[in-house]
Amino acid sequence: MSAGDEEAARLARAELPSGLRPETLAVRTAMAPSQHGENSEGLFLTSTYVQPDAATSARRFSEMQDFTYSRTSNPTVRSFEMRLAAMEGGEAAVATSTGMSAILLLIMGLLKSGDHVICSRSVFGSTLSLFGKEFAKFGVETTFVSQTDLAEWRAALRPATKLLFAETPTNPLTDVCDIAALADLAHGAGALLTVDNTYCSPALQRPLALGADLVMHAGTKFLDGQGRVMAGALCGSRSLIVDVFGPALRTAGMTLAPFNAWVVLKGLETLNIRMKAQSESTLTVARWLERHPAVARVHYPALASHPQHDLAMRQQSGQGGAVLSFDVRGDTPDQAREAAFRVIDSTRVLSIATNLGDTKSIITHPATTSHGRLTEVQRQQVGIGQGLVRLAVGLEHVDDITDDLQRGLLS
Image (cartoon, rainbow, N blue to C red; front, top):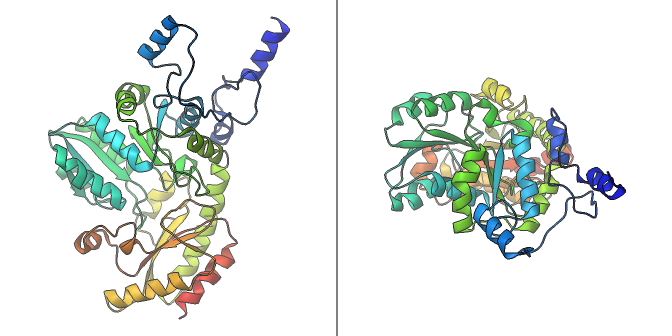
């Protein structure tokens, strides 16, 4: 081997040893470096790629394996997909422009008119609208069921059922479903199970290992971790990701931008330590809120009072995650809303916003923001009252977070 070949082999490092731990995969999985040997993955801001000759160009466009056009593939995006798939324990991943576009790609790739979906009624508000309203226009019917009642999922099965979709824990009430039980139910009916793993991320929960067929992510949240860019992804088997979703993505173009992919790729490197630290702080805040006389109830899986506490601890690596919700006391819905607004408006450290997964703690009122487009009846069905406040805990000192909440709770 020549000196040049030896250097190229030393720099490539694309083939990692088997058996690496998730923390190492989160730092090391990516495409091989370029000839320059960059240690931080390269950012390829290009829309197209020069081909060496017409025959190679024809082959690459036919096989869609190499880089031809950034709507279909990009080295930076590919590195993000490789890293996320490794962390989730999947064979492959496909990146999208947002989390909602990942669900859109899921539906476009798997379903057709006449197909049936079963979905938890406790999922994110936009997910409810996409399944229940937008795709109903195209003949895809969705039945919404209890997040936690397996009998409701079973009763909703039909011969036309092709997909079960669950988000666990849910936004904002942190309800937890039994992933393995839902997987068994789906597979017994010839359907697929997709799990939205945005809240936990692969740092805490790996749904594929529990039997799910696909994992969906809003990478905008914890995968990025600092509230910088929008991103989404689907992870699963190579046959689904490449053969089913690949053609739909290439045609529809809900593609993740290279810059956004690079930002989230770097965010994955600190995901494990962020999730551990933020989960610990969130549990401290949850216990403090549970003792507060102005708080009627705290929704957080790591609390022993949570209805699915034992299940959550088994599925989520013994951690509750970094998001909780709590109900502020109020005798009427109007009084409860007034009290919730007072807590939110009294904060001086927390950010009043609708995102989550940031290093900065974020507080919001779900009934008028993330779930504001639902009817009051829909909100009541899933337990989102006017006094509910959602808190996504960041990396500030936990005492500063509780001090900030105390202002409004004592008013």
